[in-house]
Length: 241
Image (cartoon, rainbow, N blue to C red):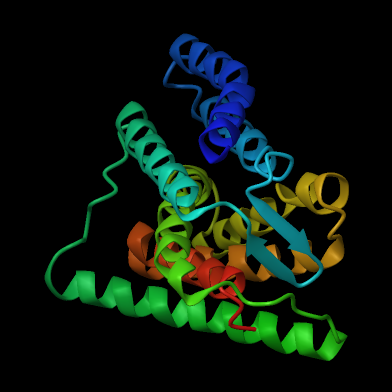
């Protein structure tokens, strides 16, 4: 059953993936904005299709992954492959700065960013009195973390490695941070209001997450932003709060 569920999901996103690939092969590299838009539109479609596929459940203030451990690891592998494919296609040197002290600083900034996102989201959730569903079994923590990190590495490559980098060429860096963070939240509106009905809490969480990840990217690069985003999602899905 699990393998058929995963296969059904892959079949459902395949036509959109093929259309996106055709567009990317047809669009000149000079049209950077159009290429970034194609990547993000496909990502949003593929991500939002995970809800009807039954891989996760979003409620106001909470997220639980209902996929099995093998499914989560398979989805993580697919996200990792997409990350590498998009980075190669768009010639993103994502490994830049991943050595020595800069590597340590990126990891530190990422962990601090995740702590900030989690702290703010937990405080707002408590203030709003939003309930939490039961936490997942401890045996699911490794698949959850792997899925959160690899899945959000792909997302951060798009929103920070491509979009924010492009914005920073046309506006002040801090304005690029704000625009990137707000666009990140906006791209969750369909998921929040029409796919899951989880509503405003999803937009508030993703706004916090997008702004913090954008700030970390500005300071510590793609690795830091991925850790901030991925660990924050792991904490949410793992029932930390």
